[in-house]
Amino acid sequence: MGRTIVYVVSDEMNGIEEVKSFCAGHGYTCFGYAPGQWREGMDNPSFRNQMMTGVPSLASGLSPVEKSNVLPFPGTTSSEFSDSGKVPTMEELESKAIENAILQFRGNLTEAAKALGIGRATLYRKVKQYQIDPSIARKRRAA
Image (cartoon, rainbow, N blue to C red; front, side, top):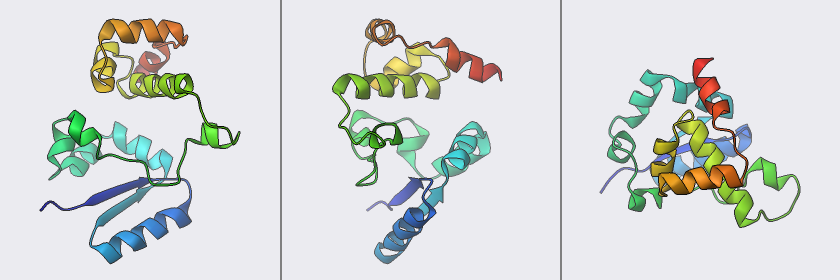
């Protein structure tokens, strides 16, 4: 049986402490990060390597089955949508997922398409449809 590791990224420190307490009571390992810490960590190769040590699915990329095991903490939503109190449309969710993938892969649309599980041509079409500018992510790489 594998060990359970929980990574919590939240700007609510009380929520992180609650999750850590829950995890400790169930024998899980829990790490809590503020969003800024997490972003900085993802840009730091030694942080990524340390996080991936002993977690094969992170080290080799997530398969579709493994992706289904990566879930947001219950009750959390994107702050972009929770402020309005409305349920986001499928188009809004899809657009946000595409934007996040493009940012994560720093404007590399081929890698973003692979991560999203769609073809490259489909991603190009959706980027145009949702008027997403991949050059913004590429410029972040240079900065």
